[in-house]
Image (cartoon, rainbow, N blue to C red; front, side, top):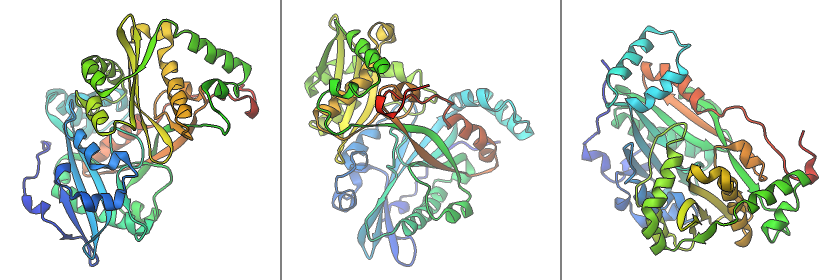
Length: 417
């Protein structure tokens, strides 16, 4: 009936300097530890934490759904000129079945009805293989990077060429599979090339970005720019934290509290719209051990118990990147935990004299109440067979953002209606 996803075992695929076209070659790796660090860093220049080899090694231990990475280095005359990062994720039928239950009622297709019966009878089997250029665990452009000698159009031609080679070797056409290129701020050029290759573009939930205004030295300075309504609301939110101790955790403290942090993270994960990949249980301590100065975990204690935490990166470009959080929902309303976490991120950026805060996706309306602005993200998807084409429309619909009302707390930009 439908083929299950099977890994490709041929080691010839991992020989170095395979021909990509007349001018370029590539080397493919299945483990981050095998990547030649000098060649990889020649492209990243350590300006992108989420493309650093040490960080990528941590993700290889993700749970819940298996994540299979592929790392490619592109060479021009045997000199590295680009890197490309893939994640291959196998969905279980039970995960994808939730999507089908909510999204495909209006599709009247015999083949899709058969597909739904297949889902019902194979709850524990591997059903869909998603071949992603980028990182399914963070939002942003972390799928590829080329040096300045390779222009955008040539880079995209090389990208699609390599995707064609690697996807065929992963035997995507024999499985219910799709190729996903994720999280771009502007459309990829040339548009005709992606259209010719049968990629469909769509918007996903936007990133919510806070720009820290010049002259702001404290969080009180920041909220003083709000209208009276939002300024009073922010102060009330801060006041609700009375009785809660906030502490930045050292590596040793993260290791001590790791089980509690992970349980709080799981409370967020369990409420997620699409439960794809779960972090490794030692994720926070592993990241802290590598990025001790640039990765921060802040915990909220009440009666000696952690009831919330927030993690973030200080990025090389001057942005504070909000990362994973965790909440005990029993205390969320009492202490306004979620909104205090958001303001805490802004406070952290101000104290570290950073210019932006990327609050990430989800809960867009709430994030705009603390001053965030939405920045659209574009993804591209390409189904690999007939069944994948049937799934594509509900899958895109599922990933697209729900309607929400943007808020504006700032007094100098007009009063919200």
